[in-house]
Length: 291
Image (cartoon, rainbow, N blue to C red; front, side, top):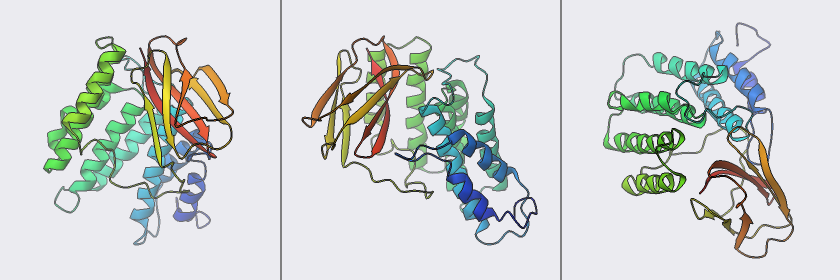
């Protein structure tokens, strides 16, 4: 029970909160999900059972997903690497929850090293999603304290490489073209370790992915090309946003003619942008760099 209330079983409260998390084409209220899941994770639990840790872990994954969604949909403004930018309350709540999970592990041994690593890397991903690179890099600077094998070391080194490149771009030390090259170098150097999690989060709705989705070139100068298999059916709507969430460009492609369809982005100023594509009854979101 949550806070001793028999009318609020933990499983039911988590399920209700997860219904507010956006997944694929299901656009819900991620800010509300963030608030509700944080409250659940901070609540006092009475009569915990063998399933309680698993349910809390699902709630934590939902918390991370809703934070990422909130930044991708611009419900929260990206910090853009500003070292003096104040950390928003939602970010602080996510970090607090992760710190609580780390504290809850107690002494670190072979039985919980993977969780210890995961929670620290999740803190990095949370800060990166919000553009708080100084905080992310501070955690990564101490990664020798929370990595325990070669794979974990390589994965944390990869994200240190990515965060360093993106931070250098935002503070003006890398051009858009140089950022693209730096990210390519990170992927090549740490090939096989450039991923976030080894499994999909076991939460809420499963959304069918397209078989293949690629976009190029990066950085782009004039037109952004897409290779999507199978070909989208019906109309494809697209929106381009800056990192502050302002809609800069939108349109509809009524007939996706070939595997390599393109969208003109020449009118955009150099920088990093979000694009949303709605196709085949689902949504693809991604970041791209305009040269």
